[in-house]
Image (cartoon, rainbow, N blue to C red; front, side, top):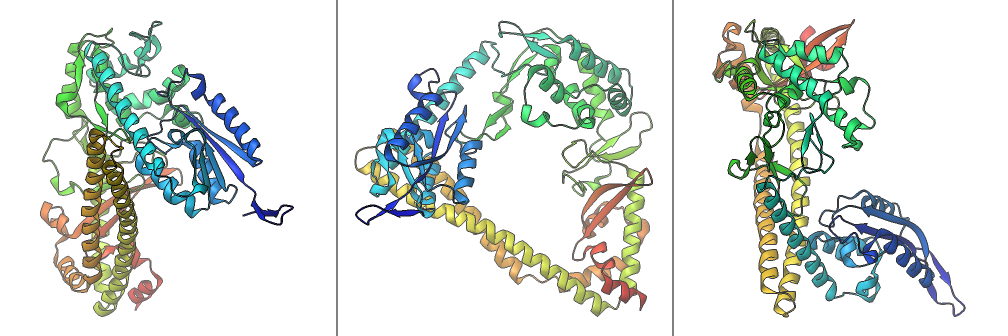
Length: 553
């Protein structure tokens, strides 16, 4: 740190300060004392009065204190890592966060380890004074407040939803909010697109033809249309490419066709948050999903909607049990998603399609017959390769590859386990401090029981995960593929390729099949990568120079 001498020749530390300001939507935004402007002005004045140097003011306006996934906070942490700061100043501990675990981590571990002086002005908290017994208690109260607010908000939303009131932040594609914001009105422009999609499928027009028509006529995809018209999801769509604006696919089409809102049904609570600390959403229990029919004007008649659902079940997806030999084997090589088997409505031909277009994945399509031909060719190449290389040399090569894979897997397990162990130690410390706070009579019974229950639950889950990871590490260390590889080689050579697509046979030798696409001379070419049990990917062997030479010999 930077040091200078005063006239008494004593060392005085020069502080490069980062002021951190935060305000959530629930933090009495109308109160002047809590406003961002008020925080910034009062803290800037405080820093000047201390004679410190203000490096930067970091502001998270509209972000909850429960999560630490905030842009300005992460920016401040990045500057700490770069050595730009040695002091952080906040108005009070709740501005840093309302999550006892994470707030405690930064105050008691991260800041001290990085030689950061931490000051919460209104709470008279200054880390230079040493450990402060009031700090952890204050963090507990802040988290308790956040949990209580979360319960009240959830109760308020549930009450409004049961009364048929809107709780959505913005209207879905096909609708706009009425001027009083109490209802949805039909967005005529988007409604025409929705009607076209439903009527086309109702009239048995192939989905691919519908998609091609939407792209040809440059119809915006729902997400981009909502951004343009309602200014939502700006971060996702503001820099989207021209091509992506019209990137309709089966997934987008199917999500519209399955949405009951277009017959006027209001659906609430389809998803729920994992906890008040997390923003992660998971599907809700069917019993907790609330539906109110005829809530707003319908774009599609119920008769057409019902008919289209019947068409969807046969048009887009293959029947259960068809081509089970490929179930849980086929994956998109770009996005990693499991690829769905579908069936054309007219030709009845089957094909695999990755319907989710994401960054780096344009949605791969491959007819079943083409996939079978590629698999068969790869398998015959594998048989030919095995036959052309001396077994002991091939086994040695396989052993090297498998050993390297094992080492890589062990490293992944160890990294994950180290992270778990670190968190377990931190939780142990936090639970001890929570117990001390409770036994001292400061913390109410209800708050203690609730928070200890949360910490214990997380501890037990992490402990169980850690135990499983340790077992995986030991099993991977002791496991050798040499015998398995030799057995697998002999088994593969004994297979008649004409029977390859028998369900149990294919799954006994193939671990996964990944689909890729490339462009050669203006044509789209399908590429597959098959990973065989005990052997790996043929290309890892065949395209190795040493193995090439072995084949020549």
